[in-house]
Each structure stands twice: as C-alpha cells, then as structure tokens.
Length: 274
Image 1 (cartoon, helix red, strand yellow):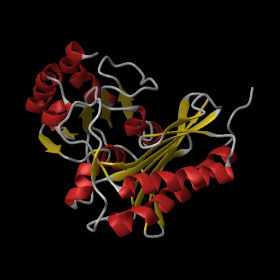
Image 2 (cartoon, helix red, strand yellow):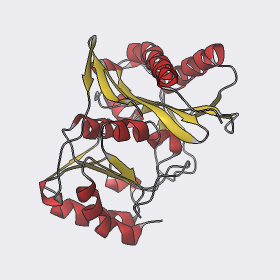
Image 3 (cartoon, helix red, strand yellow):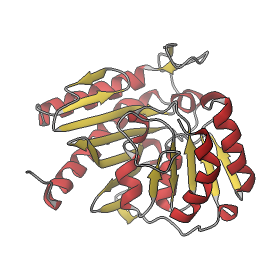
Image 4 (cartoon, one colour):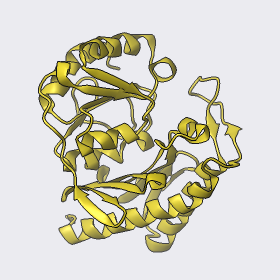
C-alpha cells in the first residue's frame, strides 16, 4: 500500500503554499475595497450569511491550479461544493474563513487549505496574506513562513485551565444554548478569553500565544481540516467535545497546546457534546 514519503509531503506542502498565495492574489485587491457582497442565507439559520467575490474568486483560482497540477485529485470547497470527494487525494478549501471579519476590514480572516490522503488530513495551511503569514503543518512538523523567513512552530505548556488564554469566534452566533452554557463554564475558569478570531486563533495555538480554542457544531470540514496537521505538527491536540478524534464532517472542536488543559475543559464540554 502506498505511503507518503517525506519528499511527498514536502512537495505537497510547497504546492499548498503556492495555492495560498494564489488565493491571496485574488483576495487582497478586494480587501477593504468593493468586494461584491451577497447574502447566501441557507441552512445555517442565521439572518446574515455573507459571501463575496473574493471568496468565490479565490476558491476558483485554487481549483484551477489543482486541476492543472493534479487532475486526478478531488476537491471539497465551501463555495463550489464537491468534485470527486472519494479520490485518494482531496483538497479541502475555505477561501476566506471569517468573511464577516473580511467585510468589516479586520485582518484576522484566513484562507484554509487542507490535503486529505485516503480520508486523513496530511497537509494544512492557514494563511493570512494581508499580514504575510502562512502557517503550514504536516507530519514533518509545523512552521510559519513570513516575509521570506521560516519559523518552527511549537505550542506552549499550559497544564491548568486557570492559566489558559481561550478563544472562540462568536458564541451568540454560532453556539446553541447548551453549547453556550458549556463554553461559559470553561470561560469562567480561563485566565483570559478573546472573541472574533475565527481560524486565525487555531494558528495562534500552534504559534504558542494562545492555549485553547473551542468552537461549536456549526463548523464544517473546510472550517477545521487545515488545522489538524498544523496543530499536530506543532505538538498540540485537537478533538471533538467527547475527546475523540475528529471525523470528516466538521462539528464541535477543541484545540489545545497542552493535553492537560484540553482534558480539564472537556469536563464541562462533554455534557453538551453532539
């Protein structure tokens, strides 16, 4: 059975970085500019579910590059759906995670790119091109590429929840009532909580400046799969609210640099796990 070699991972990592830069070339001219805002509405049940020309253009650019380089690979993306989702290799894309932040002009939105091999994410990129930050992870480790330099990423120790810096996107918009109650219990114990970071907070756990990120069941596969290799490569941990490995369909997640901190938070989260 075929296995991925270090050379394979390095090649896919380099290509994923090229994809993130290609997406950024589409997105950046529309950031803090006219971006063709629309409201998708749909099954999420929120009053406002925005998409922009930047979202759609960036995903189209990534898909075109994948088709040109790896025509046998599948793609799953937020904006244009599934193409061969059961292929051996599948790219999982969120061209702009944090579209609300993007349209508000805050620089915490990201482009998320993951590569699945036989159903498991093996390459993950969380890119913030406005800040020129590209967080990349594989089984070979995780690193931050910024302004031509490369920095090895490692999570920091935080064995106690009372010492943790906690993040989430927006409990009022994305959590159910039960999820909000569970999150608030964790929040009351944490040292500091920040809101509104979307997937950029995942990257900060890998960087070692945050300790814990919790998100609810509204997440889809494209929201979280890029984080899986990145967090693992930096020495961190990522599970669902029961403490189990994540499946391929998104859902409730908890990310932590220190397993002891994650386990302590799970005591509150487990009762609201779906």
